[in-house]
Length: 341
Image (cartoon, rainbow, N blue to C red; front, side, top):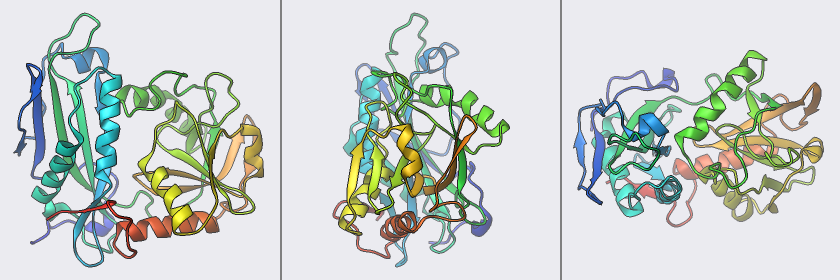
């Protein structure tokens, strides 16, 4: 199969329309069969539920070309499961995870010419999303919905190599206890936009959000989970009911235990103890792990010795092992890799 004429090695992390996308509509209490379409435009009423009350959820995952030339996706069943939970929380109909996975594989196969070749550092980003589509003027859930998946080839998240990030402890709250921080809803990301723009204007790469109730425990950033490494090489991740259950973080925790033989703890992490860690990373779909070199708490600098100039040694091992699994260089745990036939 001939690939598209794209300069794969110079791709940025942006949107490029591909040939096909999947669309399914929910009406009269049921989802239709769904279709692949070439139309990249969405047409909805001016009073659609998504426009009035932000009733929308989404996911993000990738397709890769492995070392042996296969096109694969990484744990799409977990994305489908998380989207089910997100939909339930916003009173939206569930798009069954089996159909979710099937639609993902169908869209990737239809856009196989856009899956970057192995070794370019680029991947095919996959964005499933769902929104309330019929007119809603009273504050209530919509009656009709649309589920869609589009794809776009993207370059590596860090052009020119990974550079440790400088982040700040934010004065803004990301999510309230018993709120929606644990689901992947558009409204959560809208709430973080002002905070991230402000952080960038102040010279920081990201925000560290604390728990809204006590402002003493580490939660996450606007779009990634934290992962810390102690001075005796223990991997520690924050535990909270108001952070998003990152699939990348869960995979890294497994890799740390089962592939690298490291001790792992998932627990509450007080901001006060961050200064005692050796390494810190932000984990998510886009970059897998982004090393953090410095955290600034209202003028007080916390420097992570293992990440000031490059990834710390444990963070690097985690990154190399997980990307090795994704790219087919290492044997994957059963059920992690879905081959696109």
